[in-house]
Length: 285
Image 1 (cartoon, rainbow, N blue to C red):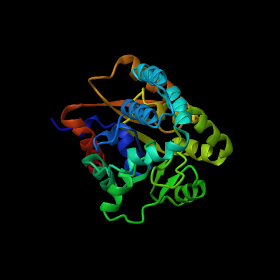
Image 2: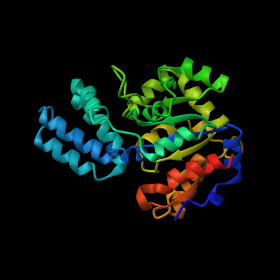
Image 3: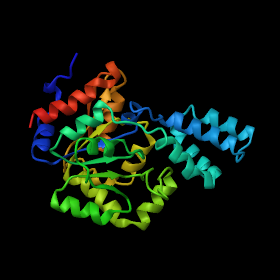
Image 4: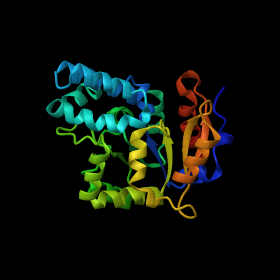
């Protein structure tokens, strides 16, 4: 069954029509391109650390036990990144660049939604920009947390851009933000970046795609711009979530903690309704 456009709230349609809308792409969107989930990413990292003999069997076993708990992902990532040391950048390249992942129908649908102001992602891969370039946007601006001036210029001129909030696997010395310490260091050294993120969430309606309440990267991002989420002012935000997994508690927490309203979609056919949602909101403009 196709996604019913009538499930799109009117205020979201209006935001898209007026070019006051953006999409935040989480890790789930890259799984369809063959990239790892968070659990698989950490498990692979443990294996590489073992192979380089930077951790022993006992520590590897402890890590594998901890990986079963998503709440501990950031803690594991912080410790493993320290263990990997000089091997970390190579691991990122081998995980996100070497497989040469290709855009999915979801990524291609984003390129057709030409009233989006920007695409924000916590992912490190290059699948989103590949989709835009394949669609003919060869000069699409791809920014990271080091490019605050460019982001500010694009926002002020209302020019489209992609912001890779936690780093870019394709850049030399990619500066990947993987842990809470990484993010805290960036935020406090680059106050302008924190201000820009807050401005993006207070000026534009954001639609979360491929995100979940257990996604540590999303939680990390939102925890540092929490002041931008006034319960009585500013735009509403939305998140596409699998209706099979949504609970009333989760709905309540997204709305109360993040001012994010959930829009249920089906998991069927590899989340085909997510792509259909993007197509439907564009058609509504």
